[in-house]
Structure formats: structure tokens, C-alpha cells
Length: 211
Length: 211
Image (tube, rainbow over all chains, first blue to last red; front, top):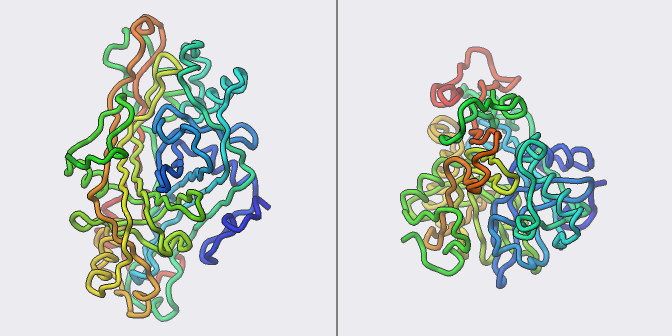
């Protein structure tokens, strides 16, 4: 089981609840942006930011939405992959194929230097695999300016919807097209910095991601 | 100005804050999934769900994550477009080009029948333009089973990052490739429901979205 707290058991039976830890890892490892939910003066705040995973710890980057990361208390981090638009024979059964993970917990700020570096490496490589070893590493000053939160993956849920629409029995006779329009995220051709010095080619670890 | 409350003024100067209402509309109108943040027993919960816009009202669909939509109190709805990975000459200046909107407020549940239909139409058309008129409309029973929340766009902020990396002056001399790897969402070829009756072709409003 992934987690057995009340809020990580899915309230609705319609979507399949993932209970496999590997499914959680795969979902997290193929994402690029998470949505970090915090409570600020009693009200929710949802901030998109970058993250990385090391084992059963999720590291959330603090350089964006910094206000929300100052001693945030309990958080909810959600990572969503949109896989397709489910086009049913009725408005009511329209849906989206997706995989999403929700992780709950009270994160700690990373202060240990070795963990801080490992966390930043994970966050950087999540977004841009191969870049950590290819570019200038962080200085002590830059490290100090980068807040990273560590959140345990202990309390997590995974929700998945796949496959064709589930129409009402009587609607299958309608002369209406039904199916799934797949959605995916792709990379375009790398766009060099306009001031890039001549003769510096695009490294394979970057060029190889474009479709 | 979009909004002038404290939490919609961006705390960090690094990213451009959008102040144009049209920019907010464009951002919302081209998204497919939002992240809805609510507070449940003092803790944040971030649920991915579908939405639609009519004028200055955002309608958020309640069929997923229904627990979070029962009298949610104050919410934060965030819509994020990931446009590119910013590959800098240093780890520290790596970033993402993106556009995101955050909308705050206390939503009301839609109970008026005409508004309920208009809201469901907006949510459906946001996800699948052209489907509202092409498939079986909702029955009274289905309408009753579909919760829609209405949230004013009054208190909103837009955050945008575009363009090449902003490296440190001394790093521009490094022999390191730098630039942007564009990211975009594309539609694949429509996948017919395996039980679709023969002879029903893919309508143009669906086929036309595939790249």
C-alpha cells in the first residue's frame, strides 16, 4: 500500500487508485512542474514550482513562490500528467485521462550542505537531465540563496484514469463519434541564447529530447 | 490593473507580473486543467480538475475531487502553462519559461439551472471545443449530479517568464551551451472507442486538433 490515511484513500470509486509505490515514483520522475499547496493566513495558496526526488523524499524548489515556502507548515504537493481528452457520447461522461499524485506532509527545510547539494542536483536533473555535470556548479552564496524543502513520500495517493469513455448503455446506439484524443508534452528544437558564442553546439543530452 | 490585494502583488521581482486582464483571459482560455487548492481541516489539498470561463467568472468542475468541493470556503485556483526549460550556464540560473495564473476567492455553488447549463457548457468546450453541440446533452438527473463552483476573477495574478537565461556576467565567457528547450502540449491522432460502430468518422472539430 502507498498510504492508508483517510485523505489518501480516494473518496470516489470512479477512478482507479494506484497503490503501488513504483507507480508513484514513475509518475513523479516523468513530471516537470508540481503544484505546491500551502495555507497562508487560513487561506489556500497553490504555487507551481520545480521538484526532484531522491528515494522517498521529494525536494521542492524554493526560488519561485518564495513567500509560500517560509515555514509553510503542512503542505500538499500535486503532480498531474494530462494524457488525453475522453470524448464520450454524452456531455456527462466527458473526462480526462490523467495520472496524478498528491503528497501530504509537513516539510523540513534542507540545511545540511551535502543534502542541499544532492537536493538541488535532483531538482536540476528532473528538469534538465545531464545539466548538473555540464554547467557551472552552485557557489556557497548561491546555495545559501536557494531554499529547498524536503517532503517525505510517506503519505501519498495516486489517481489514474485510462481508456475509452464509459458511456451509458443506451448511448452506445447513438451515431456519435467517441474515443480519446491523446495529449502529450513534447520538446521543440533547442533555441540558443542569442548571445551564445559561435561554435558551441547543442549537447546531445539536450538535443536528444526534441521530437 | 488585474488585482491589487497583497497576495496578488508578486513578492519577487524576477518574473514579470502581468497586469492585463486580456493576458489572464488568454492564459485561462488555452489551458485544460487547473489545480484547485482548498483547506480541509486546516491542511491544504490541491486537486487537479477541469474548468471553464464565462466573462469574469471561472467555473470549476466538481466531478473529480468531490470531497474538496463540499463548501470549500476560500480557494486558490492555479492554471500553469509550461513553455520551456531555461538552460543556463550555471545551475543556479536554470529556470522554466511559463505562464501561470492564480485566482483567489470564495466560490459559490451554481444552483440556477440556466447558469448551471452555461457553466457546464463552458467547462466542456474548454476541454473539447465543439462537443457541446455534438453529443447528448445532460439530463436533469445528470445536472443534479454535477457540482459546479463559480469563482470571480476579481482577485487574480498572472506570472510570466519568457526568453533566454539570465546568466551572471562572468559566466557568459564559459564554453557552455545555453538557451531554451521549448515545451508544448500536443494532441495525438484520435483513438476511436473500441466499441464504436463502424462508419462513424472523426468529426473535424476533433480531428483538427491533432498535430
